[in-house]
Image (tube, rainbow, N blue to C red):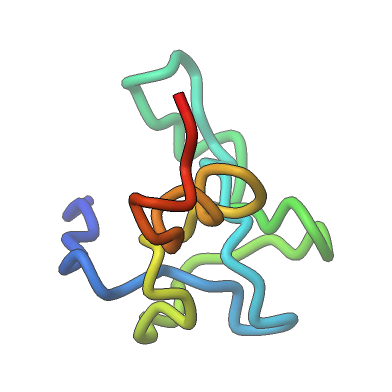
Length: 82
C-alpha cells in the first residue's frame, strides 16, 4: 500500500459525502494495516467504507483550522491582546 501524499493546500475527502473526516478502517495496530479487517479507510461522518479517497484543494486558507485557532490566525496582530 502506497501512503497518500498531500500538498499543504490539499485535503483527502470521502467520495460519498465530500467531508474530510477520514480514518484508517483496517488497522491492526496504529501503524500496521490489516487487510483482513476490511476497507482501507472509513469516513467518520457518513460511515462509508472506502478503498480510495478524493483529493481536493482546501476550502480554508487557515490550514483547516476552525474556531479560535482560525480566528487568531486571521486576526490583525493589533486586535489580539496579551
